[in-house]
Length: 338
Image (cartoon, rainbow, N blue to C red; front, side):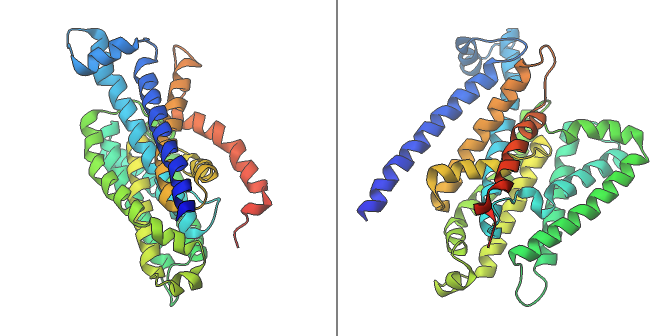
């Protein structure tokens, strides 16, 4: 009991520190850009909005939706990455393992080519529908058989479905250059051109995903001990995996709908959180939910300043940052799953 209490205090303190860091990242995200704004201007724009003031318009119409998109997508990516790694007991797993990104991409391409979608608002719901459909298909295939959805079956089903969906997507793009020109801007992954009404429509899905994530925390702790031990502790392994899979599908679908397919955040953030908290998902999940939006917002700010007056999209920066970390993870022998 004393050991748990002694461990709880520094971990709770860490949550407070991360909240402060997130607040700082939010201020940077709203203040920094092609038009620099002082913290005082940002605060005034948020508390006493004046539509005749151009700086206030920049904050409300451009910076605030962009920052909110980073927060929402970051929370979803961090949580979904931590859950999929825990549920599959595979430290190199990321949300794309369930075919979510491939499904979202296919549906967006279909929306552009068949319905003529041209706006991010239109892409959002096609991306979410595709992510949900692909995730459900992968889980359904993985659940076939007497033993249900094992980590190995989910990984194999995810790889097969992803390959199939990517093939169809590539075929559509190769035969339609107009669709390809539209799609490539969504494919990069970005926080720009989002508006508050669209983001608010995604919030209920994100809330459901977050609730499922924290419900699954104790289940994931039991699964980490192995299926036999989990069953001996009274855990329903099938229910635990289904809950975790549903949380991943909803969260990663929401993230993809909001910001497009942003790579590596769901892979590397859980590892950073695990270094701070250990394997206990009751602490790992909150840490991942805070670290991911901090990373996403800081990367977005860096992308605005390194190529002025143009911008480098956040999906490019997370890929540049994540690729070497991924290689390092692969090379670590201790990360080979049993």
